[in-house]
Length: 167
Length: 145
Image (tube, rainbow over all chains, first blue to last red):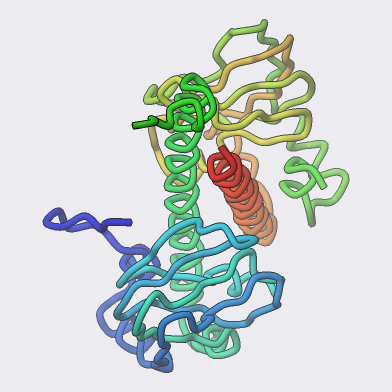
């Protein structure tokens, strides 16, 4: 999967902390623990309950569900944002494609962070999570559309063996 | 659990029936569009009966049925519709205008709105899970082909 070069894309991280003051953003990011992963290391495991959120700082990660690759994510992507609201089994596996650095936030630290601040800030975070989720949903829908198109055109072509040329 | 049940999780029976009474019943015939891609829209819909298809650029993405929710994000952002939704069979829906929803919550304890927001997050995550499942299914079909 290729990443868009040139055009500056808004990252999940920017969406997640949108509306935070510089100070709030700095102190939030300071709670994160930096982790290193090597190729094929599992960052988040499908079906296993998790209590942390990761922001990708460097490198690419792949998202897998039942051994099918759903997406590739890179710097600025956020995974596991739902832990803020509930403890539940992870919906997908996230694996490092190569050397990866992430900033990991424990749910308990996130809750403690907001407990000591104006409730307004937590409300902003909640809305931001809705935006992060709706961006992910839009991307997944886009992917579904591409795959449906491919499936349709392959079905029109007939089975692939029919096109094997014999030279 | 249907999306409608998730939307009202934590509401009392009274709160849920008050909310539902604000909906406008609407009927759509086969092929009729409930919402159109890129057109402005500010309503949330609960499907009461029938089946609708969600289409983007003419490609069917998914179908929704009784108890499914459509437009759950309207209260969070003024936005153009991201897809066209078309009735596949005679379909009956309850339509809730954004302003009506906001007025409903303004008159109540803030607690209820907070619950509603969390419920919307859970609906979004359910829709994301279902979309990912469809991607898994399509990728498998394409690999097999």
